[in-house]
Length: 230
Length: 82
Image 1: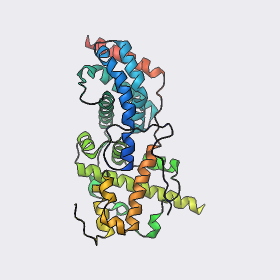
Image 2: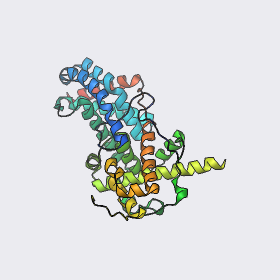
Image 3: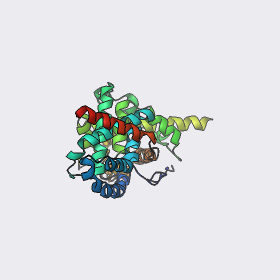
Image 4: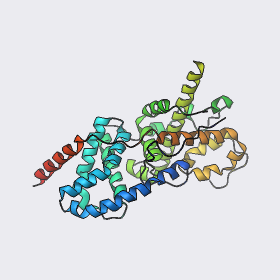
């Protein structure tokens, strides 16, 4: 029954996330990013006034400080490098337009992160993607019905998690599930924030995240069984 | 939701799991988990998956030429405003 205990930090020692939620180990992990964000923020604040006043050099420095985070965020959200570049460009264009409105009520990096999420969500909506599926939320399939009980055979998700299999499983998630999984489990947003972003109820956000995780677990178990048969 | 019957079934507990998602601390102390290895395992699995998923998305550098494109877009934007 050995569990794969995965270190919380990524290979680069960085953990992605914005405003982390309370509670789980994963969410606590997301909090670690704050220290890194604050370091970047101190430097950025020094430039904000000049950038807001139209100093292109200052804006370029802000880009250099935040490009990695913003591009990576876009790439995680859409999974496509070309589209991620386009979204990063749009995010920094929006930043250029709105930078004078930043009032310092949150960390600059957090503000920029949220601005970028909004850019991504707007793009997804324009593409006609249903960001949250009420049908999926209200009519769970047999396999994911919460009340389903399971036997001993269902237990196994043992050993190390196959990264490729997990990546495929995430890619295969329905769009709405994937979006909420990314926002909550990867980016560290809380359900009330996600509900606000997606115009859905907090319960809906929780329900879809749970189903997303169940789907991933099921996919990994199927993969594990198939590997075991080889 | 704070008072849970000790005889809660797995189905009943799992029906409440979405509520616990994102509040792992309260779920971890749930009475049902103390007596049910299956649900404990399920919860641990789900958390392990979430942690493993975070490692799949390390930060990466955008292409160098992206800044040039952004500069052009900004100039165009400013030109449009002016």
